[in-house]
Amino acid sequence: MMDQPSAAEIVTAVREFIDKHAIPQLSGRTAFHARVASNALAIVLRELEHGPSAAARETASLTRLLGQSGTLEELNRELCKRIRAGQIDPLDPALQAHLITTTLAKVEIDQPNYSGFVHSPHRSA
Image (cartoon, rainbow, N blue to C red):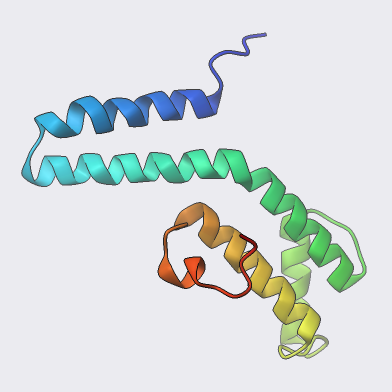
């Protein structure tokens, strides 16, 4: 089994190459697209690092909220079904806490410097 380099190490190396070597040699539209590619790799890296634990926390939260187990996809489907059917009130504090926590975890991966995230009173520093 090949353990090295890890996916995170590969993504980091490619991003460093783009940032340190490619972007300085580029201009205009091509430089812009290289920066977009670098930012996309940063998202992938954060997803690799934080995604599994965020998914586990979301699954645990949904399991508590719904009183049943299942995959994350199944639990999210069930949540939507219950909200549509009026079985869960959208103003339910437990639902709102779940949605806030889940949304913040997704923003932390996608846009960790977003001012609404950085200044959120719900964010765990």
